[in-house]
Picture 1 (spheres, rainbow, N blue to C red):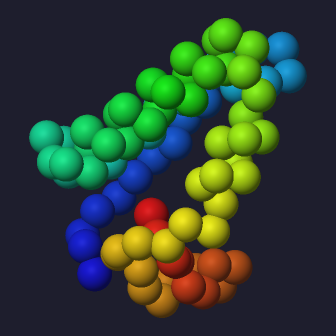
Picture 2 (cartoon, rainbow, N blue to C red):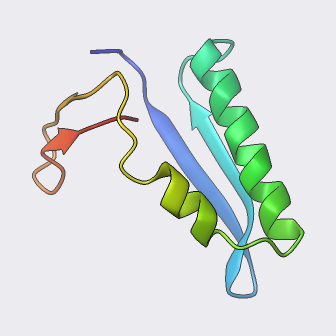
Length: 81
């Protein structure tokens, strides 16, 4: 399992997210770059009145490594980050 922590922060405008920031602990890594690009795309979509629902539909239930059993009781198996 990869040794990586992550944080998601959102600024809200009205009733929807205005900006989304996703930071992972391994700065400079490919994963950090992908998360930065993803958070920029979500932020741009929300600032131009695009709905988040298509993003949620497309990205829900994606599975990729690392996937593992967690120690969190409410989330026993993480299928991806």
